[in-house]
Length: 195
Image (cartoon, rainbow, N blue to C red; front, side, top):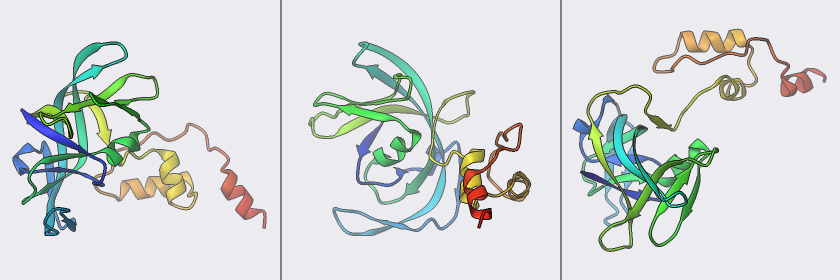
């Protein structure tokens, strides 16, 4: 059983061991500073972690088991615990509710996606998980950088479909995206070309 501490101050998920990754990439991802010792710790591995965890829905008073995919997760030797970033989780347009006995994230439809409970000392919320070492079909995706056509279109200055196709054909590690079936009129592009 692996306990992840829910942390509102970190901007990313962190783990202790590279063996927890389903897949990983070695690179220089920068460094983080610990609040306790002010020591600089280096992030040299990033990857995907699959976690199996219980979800307690306090409204429906039901419990279910789910598998979630976390990405990106960084391995940092020298940290003392696995950390789940609240900021990173909230990027999936989830909403959070909490009280003294639980911390629960809900999706747009009101379904519970992930829940945390206090640890033994009641002052830190944790998510208890099992780490899965192999891919499974259709886990709940809690991947931060989910790209779609609209996001790419805006990020690349309202680029044409052909430009985005070219970018995707020549980029590594970007999954295929769905394009609109018709060329839609871009409001920003139209305004810009009226001058």
